[in-house]
Length: 197
Image 1: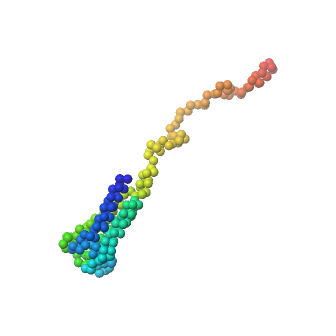
Image 2: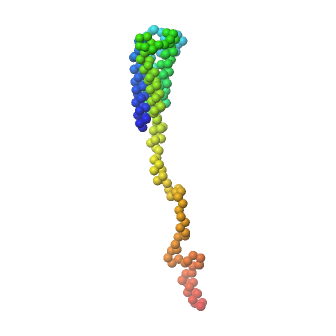
Image 3: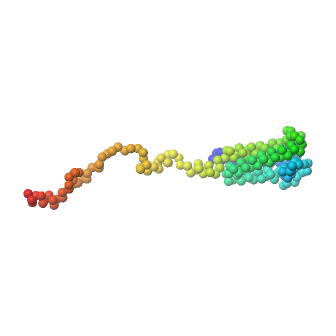
């Protein structure tokens, strides 16, 4: 239960970081929302043309955040993990295309990789960590339905008892019954025996 809570909090933090990252500078002071999505998948790489809000990296990071939040709501480790892989994948792909465009990558707000790209990478790692911490629905259900050992042992029947009982012998005879080994003679048989004598 605690692992699910901590994992969910980390996943929500990662989703928030992913959505916020395009509004920070990614490279050379340029915000991530200004990079066009098609440029990530073209051989030419990044250009200087700016994108609209819903045609730039913001949309990709919004998809990451939505998948992560759905994973938290449905307690799905795999969905949170997929969100982390998507965040890392999109960011690394952008880094490759940016490197192609400028020839090399450097770090620094003025002329290189900036806080927005770092925030996007961090959100991906945070989502993967959250996925590893969460137990998911199956793990939570397994923990909820498992019986404690005391209940399992107390629910055994007498036929399942493994302790050997000492041999107590045959039960005692009931009052008025003949002793074992001798045939039973009723009152009529005793009267016949007296008449014959």
